[in-house]
Image 1: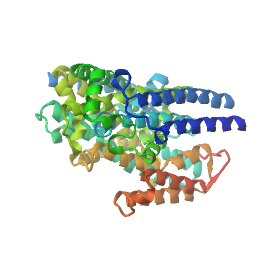
Image 2: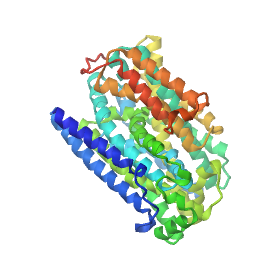
Image 3: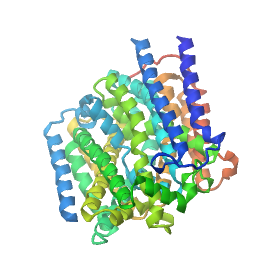
Length: 66
Length: 479
């Protein structure tokens, strides 16, 4: 159980790290689909990844309790 | 036309409130917590409706104008991260509330720590720092109503009308009515915001053309740091982490954790809550950015009005009116939740414990109703002379409640055996908050991070000095 907690902690820390990518990468200002900046889609992808992780984290947390 | 649409909306809301009132509330749980009976969709909308505020509608558009698309990312990701804290803290709050009959956040703190002082401090901070946010809804409603009617209804009159109307329907309906209104108003806001973006975008030659034109005019709005490098790496980190701690600590949201019918409903709502900002946060930001095409010279608090300005310029009177009516609906759905939450907290966390007398439910509701009126009037008085921009007022409010997060975590997931550490943590963080706000401490000491993140850190360290890592043996509150 402790190992799984560690994995989930690592997952959320990595996700948090991915949200900070603008600190390490210069995304530039190139425009993309519908005139939105390209870098916006990177963060939308991180958002999607986070939501998927949250879904499985929730399943894991409550399965553990049941 | 404008007045007909407004009247139809007011009638629609008022009728909904009367229907809510028909379901007789016989217990505090039924009046204040809708019998803890909300299923996923209703629960999700009542949670998300508390986010659809003037802060969202006018504040996000204003920040889109000032900063650009970076603001969308900060808000969307930050709000989504609150899904984790809702699952971790909210589900425990729900369980403890169900087991012990807690209604207010402070009752939970008292029940889990046995410290009345900490509980009252917790409640007091929540109430005081929610007041600017409450006032902000009235400010936003006032701006919009004034713009909608071209000044026929002055800002001051608009503020009075909105306050009186909200007082009446909250007093009549209680939580059942508020939750029903939230569901309808949440849907209205989403539909109208999409409509607003489509219509304005169409008038500007399409979404792509509008973005390209805005990018040519003000390219820095399309950079990941925002205009004038607003979101430095430290600020970016501060804001993203901040939301996950601030959001669950707002009383109107904290009390939503109690009202789920089952923990599964709350968990599902948390997932939906994490998904929603991806779609809804971008809408007002887009309109704010496009504002540079039509209104390039706005400054200061004028920027907060970019949304109504754009709607009036780029859509027909009919659409501008219904969309702005939708915005007022959003403000009122936040305002009603706040009024109900704060009045409940005043009654149960201060009036009853200090009087040391058991009062019957009828009297409790009566006191709650009087307090709804009193709090709304305080909000109205603040709104007559707003002390800052919409976003800055919201930031002040969020910072205050966020310092309670470590205590929220400690009492739900750990055992706060020494509540005195919680008290010291809150008092220290409050002193520092005011010290930063009034410039007694230079912001240079935060090394570029937002001061609130330092305060939350300090609050964490001190609170957890009093924590024992063991499940809580809880004591129900004694009234």
